[in-house]
Amino acid sequence: MDKKSSRLKRALKLRCKIKKLNVNRLTIHRTSQHIYAQVLSADGKLTIASASTVLADVKAKVKNTSNVDAATEVGKLIAERAIAAGVQQVAFDRSGFKYHGRVKALADAAREAGLKF
Image (cartoon, rainbow, N blue to C red; front, side):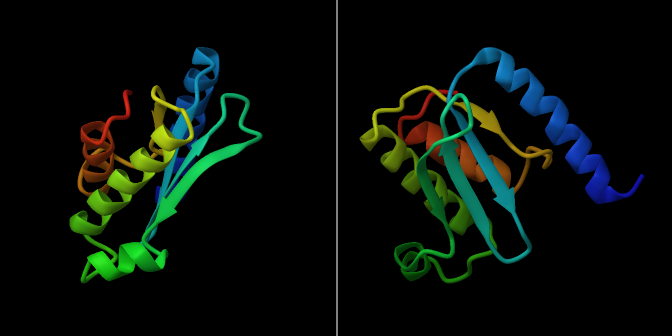
């Protein structure tokens, strides 16, 4: 099994557990250059809030879009937008990525900005 299929297998197991909780989920996607975050409704049909390093206001704040500082900015922004939309509690869907580095920085920043998960 290669690296990508292992990640997707972990993601599937995690999403099945989150689905049983029936709460909104904060899902992330990480590439070598950017990191993306969305808050999805419990049924998965509606995107409540989104943020990424592709956005101009995030690019203006950070020097490099592929490091921990950029992930921290995205975490703060997604938490602000989710709280403005009325979402306080989410489940963290890391899409099978290991919980360290940029993924951990995004999660910690979102927690500090007020999201509970």
